Length: 177
Image (tube, rainbow, N blue to C red; front, top):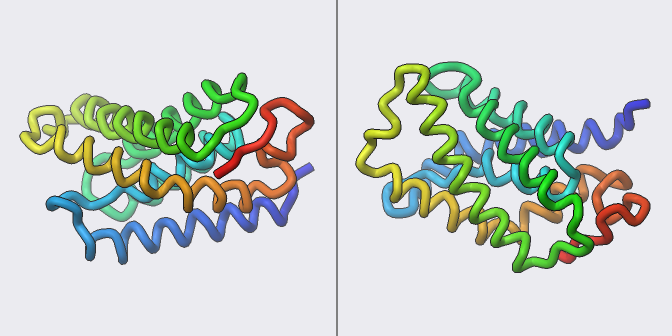
């Protein structure tokens, strides 16, 4: 049975993240790079809620992001959902995810997500791998995600509610983020 309260919290988070990504993030570029809040929230969902929910949240965040900008529809959805699923899967055996581990995971997964997006977009005819700023974009997005992890992981845990990793029956323990 679906927990409608949890679904409604995730809808609020997805909509709020989308509005912040489209309306707020472009106003504050870091070294000319717009921070990817959508990717960071997808990864936070994978950390806090596990691989399945991370993939679902990542898919919808990516799909909304693709709908708001030019380019092929679904590239961000694919990249975000795969990265969030991978993060959730890798952390299944971790008993406790502390802030430093969450930040490190957010850093690495965001870098992989940006490069994964570039590879998939290249397959669809975009010239993303030949972009001279690809490494600058990757580093800025990864660092910003790591810095935002103390904010985003607790938000994802709140959205998940009782089903958050810390509330599961001993599978993953708790997340101190």
